[in-house]
Length: 485
Ligand code: ADP
Image (cartoon, rainbow, N blue to C red; front, side):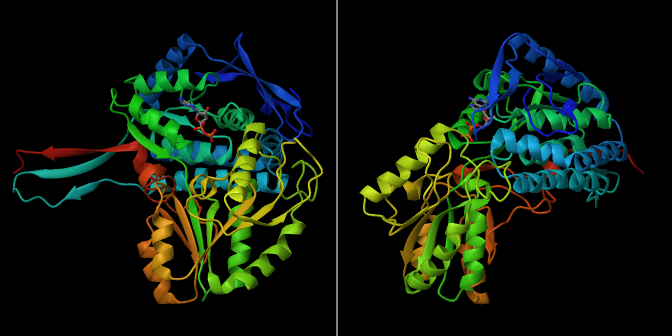
């Protein structure tokens, strides 16, 4: 294990967490730092038998854990929350070294991740069923909420902490046992979080963590009838595959899939505020978020003012190893990601887009990508149709509100959308007309533990966080009492 500057080296285990114990395997995967290729450690490739035993353990743990009262579950969660806050420096260093984002941003993610644990620890004690007014004199109807069962949580590499806690905290609060399958590119943040959960005292089998061959693990979890819930965050093609694989077990699904967020700046916007928000929306995690501003629409009449303000900000974005001070943008996750962004930029330019700005990186063939600003993008270019997942601003111009709404909605994705306008009537109109699960109105960052996160169309199913987050891990049971006098 090769992580630098940790106070508590015990947070790193090169193992899976199965039924309350850290377990190694004789097959493993190597994990590297995307900024410099340094090998950080190895993680197990779980085999079918061990996975099967893990599901059995999770099922057994569910039988007792789901019956503990909510105050007890809330206490475990709050203990876990406290331990995460105490270990936040180490967690951020682990996250930066395996994922690449700058240390300050990594710490922001750890706090954001922790906020879900606190949120659901509080939500569950305020949760309740109903007594229904009965239309029949000698009957009573009640509803109860019950934990759905074993929940499988499959998470991506771009938010290695928050994507886990957003699912795990809701599931654990509701009374589910969980099997976490983090991305094999960023497993050590997950491992450290699970080690802290172990220290918080959750019973054995309630929390499990597996790594290895993702398609094999996904297939086994989807087909197993004992796994009652699958929550997945990742790409749309993999989400569709998991949806299909879950058909035979009729599993409850939450799917947080890809986006293609429009970011619209109307002529009546506060342009300074819009450009500031665009910088955050675009460059958080070096553009590698599913809610990043992907298609930037700017009113024709703002062209010059917009470009002047934006271009003044771009040179200050320092690219480098996220562990170094004063770095704002880390590497992309791997060379394939760099190549993909490069191809999107090249094909846009060859189709007529104008390269308005590109930073000088001095590093060819590196995992870093230069900050890039393209204008005159048209809807048929791949860069306007796919998630860029890199530090590239792709700007389109528009003339009218109805036209830009049509263009913004003409995509299969429906996750996040943003727009800026100082006209309250337009704000209400446009917010209603955009076909997206989350709308930022004069805001570039919509995620918060209190607010439901999720999309429509090909961006997925279900909502995480917010006041409905628990319901994703519960079913409603109706009790009907008869023969009453
Ligand atoms: P990304 O492009 O963001 O890596 P993926 O959808 O490929 O998105 O990966 C998201 C998560 O899904 C990761 O944990 C990955 O290992 C996992 N994954 C990838 N393919 C499969 C699959 N066939 N079945 C189950 N999980 C998968």
